[in-house]
Length: 159
Image (tube, rainbow, N blue to C red; front, top):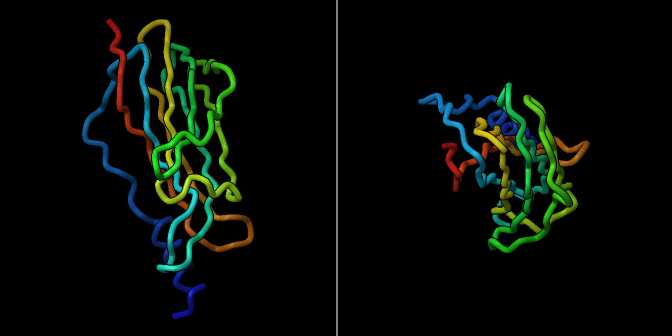
């Protein structure tokens, strides 16, 4: 099978994978959290060949009643070092509002294990935002596209 056909088959497989299973509905409210989100800037297709990816991080305020403030969006490389702080100033997200941040495919600094750290806060208890990164190959190239969901790594509980 030709390399192009293999990539196309892989893309089809990745795009038709079942959605992650949610075992419990978490409606716990918090005053703030730090969320870790995977954000690959490249993946390997062969031992000596990799595909460049663009990563779009989106933070969705899923709380229908309470605003929240995104206070930090940092992009880290596969070695864990901070590559850049993407957010210049705190960003208020109204109920059900969203904000997106792009790391373009020509930014290869992150490597295979790149990630975002997102911090948010709220004046009163709010539902945890849905944080998700979408990774895609550049325009005009058939290749993989996939998502990764954020994982809360610290939380300030609402009283």
